[in-house]
Amino acid sequence: MFHMPMSMDILAVTFDVEYFERVLSDSGRSDTLRALLKQPVVKVSPHRLAESKARLLRLFYGSLISPAADASGGHSEACIEGAMLETMLNLIADPECDKNQYNGSSPCSFIVEKIHRMLLLDSGSPPSVQEFCDRLRVSRTTVQKSFQNVTQSTPINYIRCIRLNGVRRELMSTSGSELSVGDAAAKWGFFHLSHFAADYRDLFDELPSQTARKNELLVTE
Image (cartoon, rainbow, N blue to C red; front, side, top):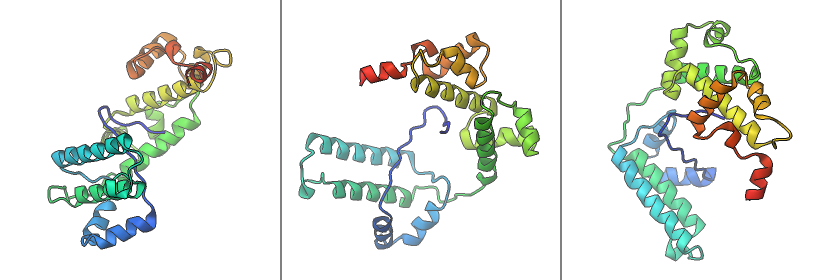
């Protein structure tokens, strides 16, 4: 579970390790790519990224239109995997890709992860930001900068989003007869229900009472 900045899209792709290593070695730019792939974030050219997304969308759309096409038609699983890997490596190796990467976010990531884990352990009575600072023996400024660097958000907003997402999972995994909205909110430290409902609506664009419960999801499916 994690929180990410608004307007960010995430596409997770996995490749067979041996296949990935083979393609990387045959690329002729293995050392450059390996160095870049060690970075926590690789900043690519926005317009190159847009071109790559458009190419992959055309590929995916073609595979949906003609799912039975063979390798010669370009829609086999192996062909799609190869095209995706080629697109990713070309994007990273592009001259416009920012090669000046750094690992400065590691301490920041550690702080964010520690607070995230402590929050999950104390979900019913979430500590304040200052209490987190005291537990980690770091300043509030350090915590603020860590969250800004890693999540592009404030600690207060991040913690609130994690808790709200926790309530949402509780609601979606139970029926109304099993768990009331108030009890679900209380499990994540929300006791002022009007404020909780307003924050929930701001994040999910619906009131907690409007969230589909487990029995409703089964009927929909």
